[in-house]
Image (cartoon, rainbow, N blue to C red; front, side):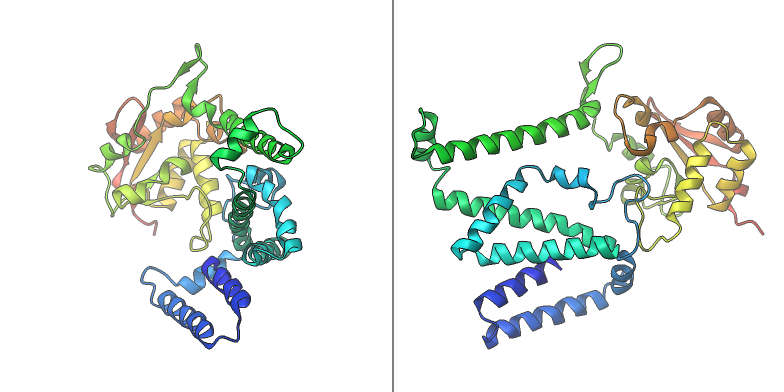
Length: 341
């Protein structure tokens, strides 16, 4: 959609009466439509239609329509100052119209509750960055002579450039501070004393389970740990980290997995859930619990904490086939992997 939108803007600006431009645009539509119809994995058209109403990020993430996600656009918001300037000066119509169209789609989608449209915030960011780059190029702010002059005591002539430098610095510093505090828990340990965590390849543990699970297996784990399992092993998983229009019951699946991890869950409930999804393996990841200084949405780490009775129940419902310092892989009893008659 972004390609078609940009192509339409260029077609509109450079003259829609040009036969060659119109034919190129029509040809692009035909090619894209044809490719979507022959998409071999699933119905591309059905996926797009369902994506308009599916809550993609439920239940772990926040929607891109919410204000605290909008402000994370960060320094790109500076482009809002230059879009009107381009309109007044009658320059950079591609940037002005492109940003305007994306903003309209974003706002209308929010009002109409079309989830697919929230992705247009990324396209808006693209045009905002273009407006900043275009304006800085016009005033030659980042040329070496300009930087040299700005570094000295500013005069009335270059005070405007100094002000822009200040705005850029504040925006970038703010963005780094926000992301720094949010991500600090993944790189720093504060218990028993502050220390930088040693780097560990996140795929190491997954590589180890490749020999234990394959495309015929169904693996249950917390949704974040489950994310990479299909790509690396070919196995299926019980629940997704965020919703997918082709998996309409994912919210129920997430609810069941959360119940499975609940410290008050009985072994009967856990057995019922394993039977329901014909789970062949259960992967418990202790690493998820180590980032306890990070405040995640919906108390993710608390909801999927590994407790003593979960381990003891799994020893009754299956057996340990592999483990290391961070993960335990259980294989469930064969009877639990069969559909209940």
